[in-house]
Structure formats: structure tokens, C-alpha cells
Length: 379
Image (cartoon, rainbow, N blue to C red; front, side, top):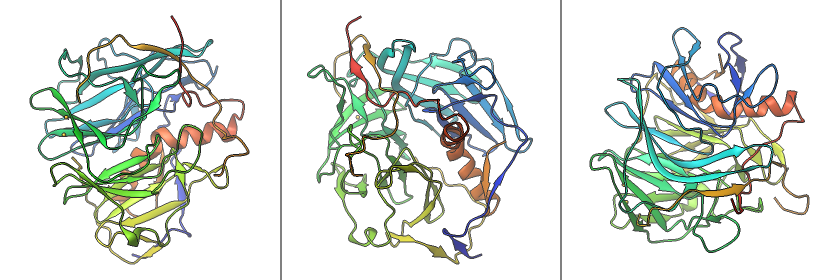
């Protein structure tokens, strides 16, 4: 089957649409690929356009193309988070931001760990008091085969400035899902700090980080980097072959691993200052961007599967700037893609919390994207 990322056909599946508009949420696929779990984000009623947090977790049944709302008890509202699932079916969600007052744009940044057991259908906030990391959001998360979650980048409250600061990309937060312990690793190599980037874990233990932006919406360097988790400490590198045919600098996009390819789509193009639905294919074996491919893509799902010290602190209050468009002076049921059933599932996961955001911006240009520039204020 020939794949040409400049000539793709997108198909809208009208039935089974998400009950609410949402953005800055996280979507996680179940172990058997049957269900997508959607949690958090800025949720709005599709009729009134008022913020609606009456349900914070939704599940999507792939076979039936239907949404449902599981009964989980007390679930805390969070935005700009990323979840991962372990081999026992437990989803882990760290920290995040919560806009508690959407009129004054204030809220809190957290450093707790929440879990959703997809087998028992239970929600739990873990009681951890030792070596808690700094409160953080806008990070990426990948779980290694040994059960250690690797958190990369994002913004955090280190208590030293008025604004939340970008996380040093050489300071990796690690959480052991077997012992429920946090630790931190100082990596070798160096890349720019960033938010709203993506990361995928390859079968041979490399985490591919792509895209993102600085706090003032400028380009980060490099556009793509590899974190080798086989080494101790982990090591950053920049494959020279990844420059040719590289996508433009984007943020707010999605990336999923499917066989030998990282599939990236959606996001905001920093150069053109516009939204995009362009699809990019990165070959994880050759470390090259492909514009076309005649490789057969069979139906198969790849699961990608690490530790920080800080004292436990009360969540910090913050404000955010809801404007998504960067300043002019700066440089800068779901969608299914025609690559077969397997890729349709992968893209569906990506689409849930990105495409709805794009749809809202097109159909409701007055709606703004919160959570871009959090600033600490007094309670």
C-alpha cells in the first residue's frame, strides 16, 4: 500500500461524537485496543458553550463507535496532562494544571499521581509523600518495559520566579509503578527546554521527542531528538539524518508509534502561525522523515512503555493567558485516516483531544485556548 502524506483522504465519522468540546485532555488506549479513555481538559457543553465538568472521564468503544461515562467516584479536574497505561491496565496521570476560577483565570499546579484502573473501573489518588517532584504540567510521558514512567519537559513551579519555568530537559522525572517511588535522573547531552511537544518510545528503548515551543512561542532546537534509555544515565542525541524533509516547527500536535513509523499530525505551525492537519511519517529505523512509503502497514498496535527529588508542597495558584495565537513579531465518532484499520485506531487516539480543539476554533472562533502562560498569583 502506497502512503503519500501529501495526498491523504480524511473521513469524518459522524456517529458517536464526543458529548462535550474539550482541549488539553489526555487520551489513552486500553490494552486490548477496544476502548479509548479520555480524561480531563477544558470541557465545554456543546450547546451552551459553558464549561461543563459534570463528567471528567469518558470512554469510547471502538467497535460500537459510542461514548459512555463510567462511574468512578471522586475524580479531580486537570488540564495539560498526559497519561500512560501499564501492563496490568492501570493508567497513570501525573500532576497537571486545574483552572479553579475560569472567570479570573486562576488555578493550581499539582504534583500528585492519580491512577485509573481500567479492569476494576476505579479511580485512586496515590498517597505518596517522599521525593515528590516539583508541580508540573505540559510534559510528555512514556512507560518503559520495566514499569518506570519517564516524564520529559513541560513547565513547573520552582518557586524562584513569578512565571512558571520550563523544565530542564536534562532533569528527567522518573516514577516506578512497581514501588510507587519517585526519583530524578540527570541526562547527558542537551536540547532546548519546551512545552507542548510529543514523545514516543521505540521498541529498542529510544524516546523520540519532537516539536514544541518556548514560553514566548518561539522555535526550539532541535526539532527532533532521541533519548537513549538503555544508557545510564540516559543520553540525548540528534540524528543528522532527521534534518532532511523535516516538518516545520510545530506545537500542540500529536505523535503515535505504529510499527516502524512515528505518525505526527495536527498542531500549530510556528512559521506560518496557522493550524495544520498535515501528516508526517518518521521512520524509526532509518531516522528519516518519509514523504511517501510503499511499506505494508498491517493491523498491529505497539505499546510503548523511569526517578525526582523535591519536598511536598501545597499546589500553587496561577493565572493563564487564553490567547493561542503567538505575537506577530515572533518567528515562528472521530477521524480515521485511510491507512487501514490499525492506523485508524492510532489516529483516533490522537484526534480526540486535538481535532476537537481545531474544530472548535474553526466553527467557534470566539472560543479561546486557556493554559498557555501560567503566572503565579497570591491566593
